[in-house]
Image 1 (cartoon, helix red, strand yellow):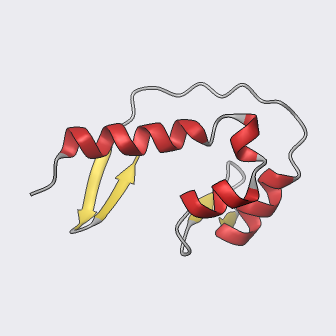
Image 2 (cartoon, helix red, strand yellow):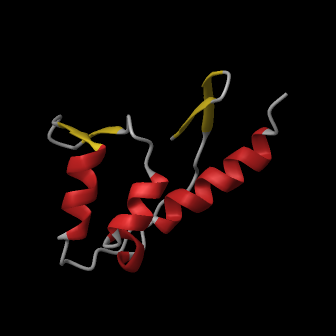
Length: 84
């Protein structure tokens, strides 16, 4: 049985790490945090894979302040969770 509160806390902490410029620009850390099959859909509707995301974050020069709260966890299947 999954500890939802514990898993939510861990995933939320990892997500917030990606909001920090020092972490976002570190290809090793981002590469470890993102699954090899990672995909993201940008605001434009364009899809980005892990390689594209790691490369884009490594060259990011603007120091964005990212604020996120109210994370929710959805279990998609055994061992697969979606953080929203």
